[in-house]
Image (spheres, rainbow, N blue to C red):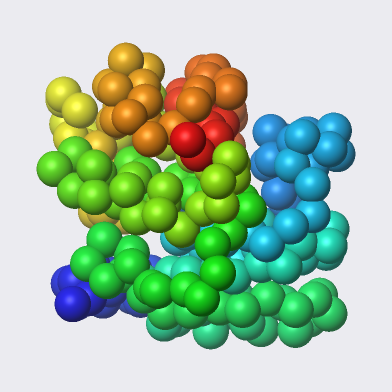
Length: 214
C-alpha cells in the first residue's frame, strides 16, 4: 500500500514549487550518466527509472534510443514528466507507484535499472527488500546504477546519518562500506566512487555505484 504521507509531501512540492527551485530537479542529465551512455558501457536497451521525478533523465535516455519505463510515487511529478516527454517528442512509459510498499510487477525483466537520488530516501530497514526487488526485475547480468548521498555530505540539518533536507524530507546518508554490504549478496560491483558536485548553493558528496546482477 502506498505511503500516503510521503506521496502527499512530494505532491505538494511538485504542485507548489517551480521546477527550477526543486533542489533535486535538473533538466540537464548528469555527466556520469552521460559518460556511461556515450562510452557505450550502457547501450540502448529496456530501462527502468526508479524515482523519476519530473522525468528529465528518463526523457534523456529515451532520446538516446532506450525503451524507458519510469516510476514515481507522486502523481504530480508523473503528470509533469509526461508533459516534458511530450514536449521533447519522446516516448516513455510513466507509472505512479510506491516502490517501497508495492513494487510494480512487470512482464519482462529490464536490462538496466537506475535510481538517481532515490536510495537516500529509503530507510536502512527497508533497503534489503528494495534491493531484492531491483535484482528480481533485472535480466541476468543486467546493470543497476545507484547514486545516493555519502555520509560525509554536510548540507543537511542534524547530525548522524539521518538528516532533514530544506524541503523537510528525511535523508539517510550512507557509507561506502555500508552500501557494499547491502549490494554484495546480489550484485557484482563494477564501479564505486565518491562524486563531489556543486549545485548552487550546495556542495554535495555522493556515492556512485554501478553494479551487475549475479
